[in-house]
Image (cartoon, rainbow, N blue to C red; front, side, top):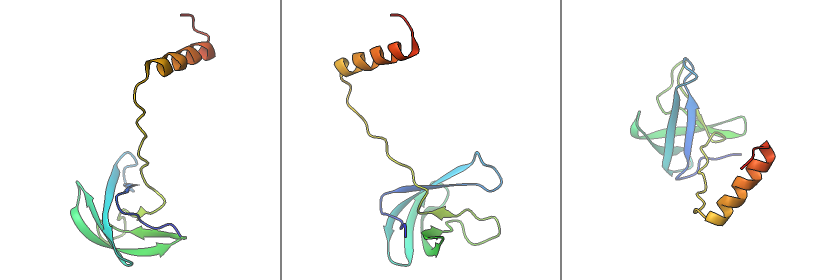
Length: 103
């Protein structure tokens, strides 16, 4: 079963507007609750329940169109690679050759 992890940011979309994406970061957890932080709720303790082999939570309350965060939907942190001029030149050359552009 996929579980909520501390320090990971999870997202959900509004049921009314697909372009509205809400993000919630897990600050701490117990077996039955998680403490989340977002610009919508601030810091809040939410009960966790299991559904379809994953932990779920309803951060804005339980109502018919309430958003649900699911432990499977998290935002992956991008790895930042330090700039390297030689590597940048190789990647630029490779991209140029692949697209058929001349220098």
